[in-house]
Length: 264
Image (cartoon, rainbow, N blue to C red; front, side, top):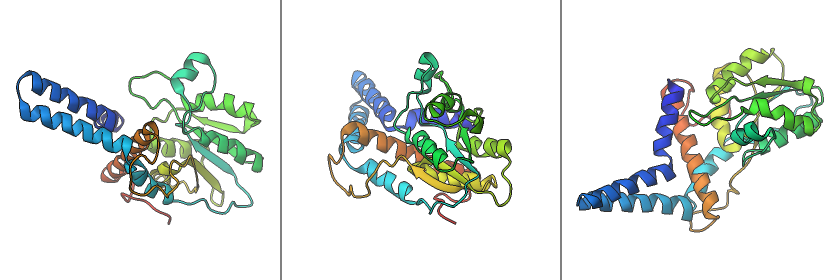
């Protein structure tokens, strides 16, 4: 139920869709002569899109998330590397049988780099189909083709292809690999996603070291206009809002212990 509710809620609240619905409300208000509704809907839609695409709002929301967990010094020995899905184009890969990456594809590039650095470590890919309506191939099903092409031996890979969100990533991965006391595991995911991921792995009693990748901000954007191209600004705003909402929703539901988890 949590999965379905979260997907439906996000469909309506993400900036681009919300602006479209507000604009639709404005058009309906104009058609029926409801001037206040028409003006409020159109102005609200313009403000949402203007702030999301023309200002540094997205970077300002994103940067605190990215700065929360820093990469530690690499340990001498690593027993396993957990890579969270979300970096592959599921619908395209299902249709074409390839391994097309999206803007979070750094997760898998870094996994291949770490796999070469720690040749004895297991490589765990956690990620099934996380969409409610669209069909696609889960990242754990696609990743072996990509990582094999990058030189990672198939027998090193452990595939968790049932999880649909980060909570299930943590629970299902621990159940699959049963980490032992004293082992060292790295968690690879996007930097903005690391606070929620670390909190959920802690809650699942799976001790991991954060290894953030896929940074979206330089940390030097500041307050201003046109600091990035509109498409990237909109994407950063959308993803940052989603992550903050996710943090508070998981905290409110008791799945994590803090609305803004940080280093222990």
